[in-house]
Length: 336
Image 1 (spheres, rainbow, N blue to C red):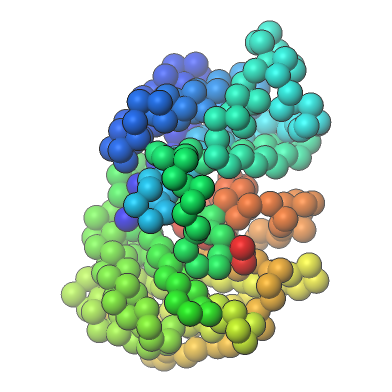
Image 2: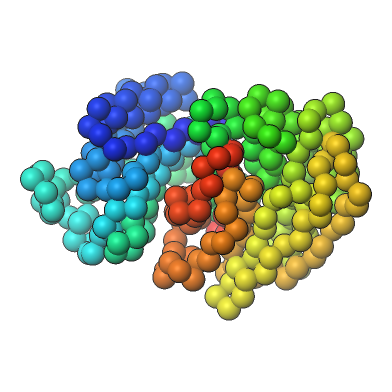
């Protein structure tokens, strides 16, 4: 399971801790001293901004990989005043406080990828990617045809999440799994990990067939809610099979189609497994999430957000609709 961590940012003492956590993660992932230093600077600058200017600020660190190259995604989320002029704030020397004003520009320069979304009086979301080998990563094409953005975190007070996710690409298709082990803690995680094992072994099968195999495999666990989506690029369709409280939706500029998951718990009680087929649009978004996220979200409330990187979309939904009393996974996918 990819390592993820949430770091609340409300006071200056938390900035140093965020830097230490980020540097330690980079070390475990094999970053050299130069690239570790980049991670430290990016995290420090984002953390300082959250403490100085934001409300309910949080940094999310997420492990990434592309072939054998490791990376870290850093998401900065807040419910602060927002940024009126984003292009201006990215210029060196611009500051609304007493600082030199080099922070945001430095973050952009040190990151292999940088994106920002902000709404006045709603908040700001920033995504930055730093890779262990920024030279070689340019020569490695991402696998599959989808860009994914994922927030997957445990319930407050838990060290391990009972939620997880996985993806797999094959000719003209991509499969995505979101699983939520019953309850939370280590036993829930065991069920979710078993679901990923089955998914990895059976990814050549249809979503319905994978769910049916998982139902047998998870009988030795407490069970899980799970859903699998298969996007077929040649036929522009999406096949979907879900059991339990995993929500899914396909969004386009003119539509919002909710995907059907049936009642039950995989590995415990499943009355029926059924696969549904939907139209897929190359410009559309697939959003899947566990019940740790409220279902009352609407992207229409965020002008322009749907055109941003999936990581920013997942981050904003997590920021504004996280229930706070359960593990949570939010996954957003778009054709690259």
